[in-house]
Every structure is written in structure tokens, then in C-alpha cells.
Image (cartoon, rainbow, N blue to C red; front, side, top):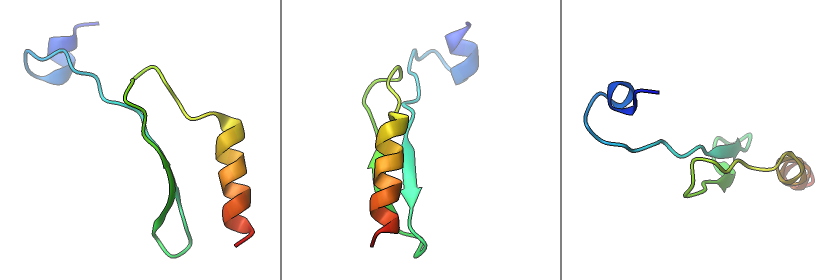
Length: 56
């Protein structure tokens, strides 16, 4: 991958993935924002947080 071309400059930065759960009120109810582009939220944790939100 040509990182410079993808970034549009000479940096070697990668965007960090993030996962958000937004409540019906439009407010972020849960966020997973790792400081590592290789990490992702676990599906089991996302489902757990959705269940907790639904129980409110």
C-alpha cells in the first residue's frame, strides 16, 4: 500500500477505527475508540452494550 498516496501527504498515519452506539435520543451511549488501528470492538461487547441500552 502506498501510504503517502492514501494520506495525500508524506505522513505515515493510520486512522483508528471506532465503534459508537447511538441512543434513540441521538446521544452517544457507548464508544470504543482504541489507540491502535489493528484493534476493533468485540462483537460480544457491542451486543452486551446494546442489551444494556435496551434495558434502560
